[in-house]
Image 1: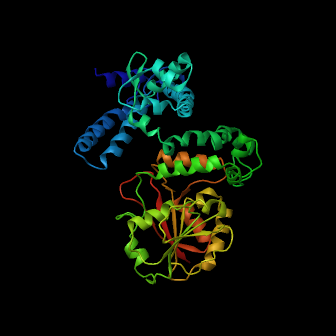
Image 2: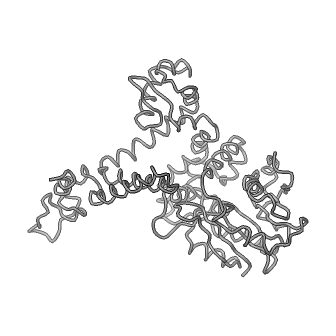
Image 3: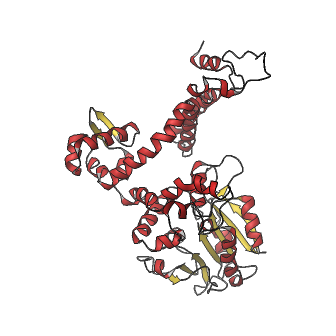
Length: 442
């Protein structure tokens, strides 16, 4: 008997846990015993029936990865995660969720604060716990405990007894752009996430739609809206901008060839004189997206305008001189009329539907019928097979009273705001990537 067959036999079923008996025989006293009566379930693999297929897929995608197939890495990564989940027992899953995830976060954030990863990454030569304690000024015993957990969770490499080495992740954490995500979450989100179960119970498990009555207010003991708390803390703004720049790194962009046809759908048919506005980035922060557009489409005619609140727009420095910076609150009427395209990147997901309609109501009068487009760069959650990055972000946004949306939800929202979706553009062969929703006046 193979090891897999032994596991399946032990559990009574090759394809699940319908039987309450380890030998799979019928219960003479009931039609079917509850799976909860099977004492083997908590200590048996969660989905042994999936293992053979996953092993086959891993072998296939592994060959493709070694053959330099650009799409194979993500497929192999997804299969590997699925294999771990299938082999892991419910007991192991419970301990991982309850113990490992919270503690490794604390260990990483502490490591960031004491510049541990920077000290470890200065060379490829391993360092002892004692050396790292001296470098960071920490208590050697305390640090050795953190190092063991960081190594156990593969954040750092283990080169020998109390001897550690850098990894690619360690090196990345030397940069604030990567490391800022950890204190950012603690500073502005984590207490709200931890409060979400209590908040949902308190409000009768209704979907939150009031941005001043959310898990964030409960967790942080504040009456302020999320964005009001951010305004009061300049450190958060820096950390948030760094975190968002890394979130977008390596992900397909709608401006890339093969995603949204920029030439055919945006540039062609536009008024080609340079005095007319081609693209307005509403709520565009300090200009990441317009800078990318200018870099990828340097010859596109027309003006590029960056809009955000005055307190944000003043930090938009070092941009291409052709990008105009215009302070503007998108809850007020759009001052630029008849532009070719009005673009919003991850703006509407910050707000519940009624607030989104207010944003769009202030934009609608500026649109030129048959000419102006509204380009909405957001997540579109599929009905099946949603990616964990997207669903994680959705629950984070739930804590501030907003969220990600499905395609049906987008159609309902935008049609209620007098917009017609022309097409939802998505990067080919990608999971969890943002889409571009192309709209015009209905």
